[in-house]
Length: 491
Image (cartoon, rainbow, N blue to C red; front, side, top):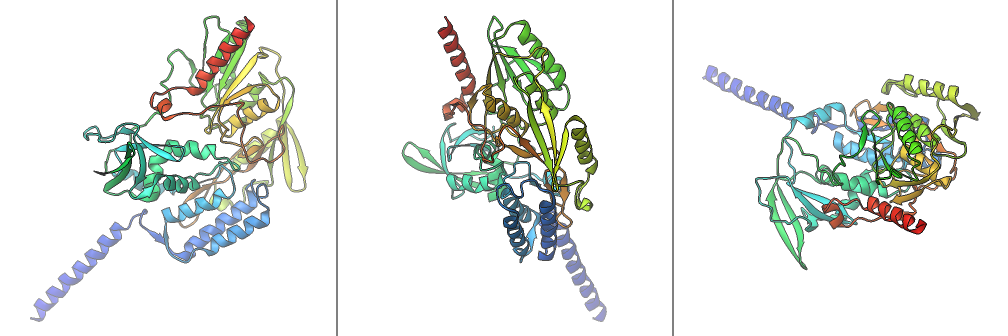
């Protein structure tokens, strides 16, 4: 009996131990909770970094306002939280900086874990427009679609679409008080926000409109290996000449080569000099009268690239300023790449002029019009909520010099500038989440007044659901109408 009792005791302890091991194995980076003291330490590190170097401090709110905000943030952690919960609260904090270049990312290990999982998705893809949402695609080819393409969705899993949109946009940081950037990115990522913020159920419950009636549809979740890309815009035009390295393409829109359309996908650090040289040489050779520069969905990039483009377009010299209050990255224990910041400071000191006021260094660069192949004809610029950062610099300088007509919607970045230049990631000590913090204030000297808003188009455009479903380019149609009108007026 004692031996039998000892045997059962051993088995019992083995079961308990294996249960504990299983429980430990089940706890992953995704489910792990961090103690309030750990969260507070991360919050304190972030506070020190932001107050020491973030260029937005003092722009939209005084420094004392942010000090109180950050202190309340540090003291708010009284319960344990997962990395996701802490990240979401941190995102709400940095949104108060009104800076689209400041971002809060999960830790690298969190992303690795997520990439290993087969996650639940809705097979139906929803597109938000003006606080409404519509079903535009069914990703599960094995499932018959009861919902017709273009059906209006009024609620998902018991939550109204307008509430989902309003809540989701709080987690998208943008420059100033701009809303077009938030609308732009929520339209591109609505389905991810829906699942990331409101959960991934096994069964979806969708309320939709059928005439004037409201109906409900219940359907199972979809678990693809990977989500296929969903393109909203028109198909790529095969007639474009493409500079791959520069991410620039162009084509003439008429037989006489008088109207050229140049689409700049982003301002790259390589290949742009050659691209601009060839494009503006062709404009000169053909005596082209109209140049359309397409900056829609251009998220920015190289400042040197924008200076080069503006040198072909501006009539008078203009200055642009990089401003910073730091000599080197503070709290280097939590970041890397201080050399890139020092290199940028040195480069701008060499090509521009350094002016120090109190503790602030201003590096002033002069953009000079070039003589060879300078373009003096009419200029039209296409913009939208995805036009951000460097594309706003180009737009602001052309707008303030009355050099171009603007079509589309208000840019995602502000007309007075942004916080960028160099943007190191700070890794917080416990959760390991990464916070991108700009080191410079990019000042558009042509508009020194803080507005908190983007470049407003001269001709605003609006998309209907039918336009999107039929992949129409509303701005391009308006361009063609304006060009046709001008040519008719000439004749």
